[in-house]
Length: 172
DNA sequence: CCCTGATTCGC
DNA sequence: GCGAATCAGG
Image (tube, rainbow, N blue to C red; front, side, top):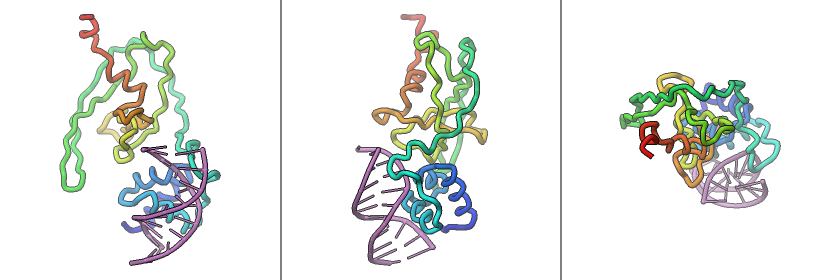
């Protein structure tokens, strides 16, 4: 892949925003994190303050959205989205939580964790793959927080995923 | 083991 | 100039 002016600009932008090299590589596509780091050096961009775990970096500004009221009806929309990966056409069903939190009963004071707002290409084996938003919209992203044991979701969303339906819960 | 950036060096 | 391999560190 070529370092076009456009891609270089994006690199500069994302780097200055504090994204990690691997995340930038994922967003640019077609390059490794090494490529990104190498380019950063060649461009003489300012390096990271402290080497090693720059966990401090990639945090998006906290959104000041108020916690949702507890008693919305839980609705899950299922959309079939089509995308291409190379020559392969992938169809996948994505469940969209229109209302993320339903049962506050078991965890009354749970703080809804901030998501890392990762795009599809940024997900790894150990990032939470809980979709957020409408796949058809631009702002669609995934939770992206750490998921223990390489489970598909972070601890928070695992609980939501396993939440028994109201119907099933009635049977208990 | 997971990740991070930094450096080297053959291409 | 590029980036994989490697190193160093959390």
